Length: 483
Ligand code: SF4
Image 1 (spheres, rainbow, N blue to C red):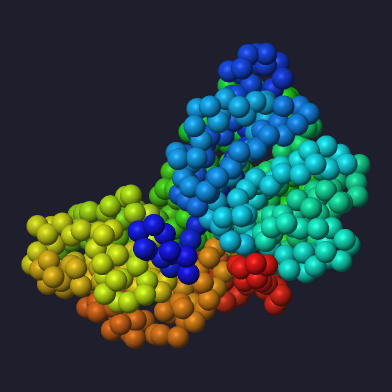
Image 2 (cartoon, protein in one colour):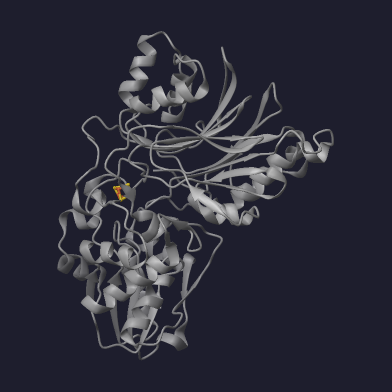
């Protein structure tokens, strides 16, 4: 397991990745240096809004009509790009990526990937994970195509380069039929930017227009709003769109599979101001909390959230139950989603580095703590202990999703099943393990009801809860299988 510079190791749910694309039309003042670096600059700003989806590395690729230039490094967006880096990225179209690794290690597989092809240069940014990447990789190797990295994104760009077809949209469509799994992609070419989503619709992707005919695409609508886009549309599952000088062009629709949008985007990953599948993430989370309060009421003095992603659900629980909402934790925002792993003592220290208790708020109180998930059970126990040490009389844990029992193969790194606490333990065993006075989860049917109440009638993947995978995961590879 990797250790970061604090000696903390990563061990919880990890976001997947964020992708972004910006195309400035040629008619814009393209002779000025400022105009030419606008696309990269816009991508840079947009990546800030997607930082929550991946904090290991980021990159921007820009096309000046003939050539593609690329800059990518490990780190946070704010640490990677200097003003002079952005100035050097000259071109009217650009794509960007912020990464948490799902296949392949972090350091060598930073996106976008870039290669020269017989049809011109291309760069690819990808969010998701192919379950048949190992077989596709072997196919390429058998054809004598060399590979330098260990990520499924490299496999995808090499397949695109080698694919037959008269246009990029044809080549993308052919490859999409061979790719099994989750993929939302942005492909930068010297003809424009193509964006596409897998036929199951696992990961979000949306497009929109900004002023002066600039077209943009992003993993989440919150990033489009950051760029000044007031009206965005979602890329359909299986759809290929092209950002061009004239706007957004529908290219092709691949046959859709039964829809399986990732419900965890609503539970945890997406920003609360994002709208996907017609539902606002904040509203959905509030509704999760309301349903939770209906099925698992408790006599308590306050409702608190484990910051930050559980706040909206805690507000919903409070609204439905009538128990006042308060803040119980102060969170250090500079540590990231990490905590110490090797021993219980170190784990407790890690949680203590990340959270402090607001003592006056919790002392002598019966408390409902709302969180979005218990994955390995290593954080919740220390948090309950801290609350009790601060004088809380009772601590009741309410989880705004069902128990996470199965691994994800579609782009969310949860680790192996035996590490998931709910895989082998019942809720009562988990309650004892974490030391809570009571523990309740939101049942799956209530979670889906809350999605309907939030305006979304889409079908969702719930495989990490019920083990019913929308695609065959028989040959799925582990994150570091290609290392
Ligand atoms: Fe999302 Fe869970 Fe399905 Fe993975 S298994 S795509 S995390 S709902």
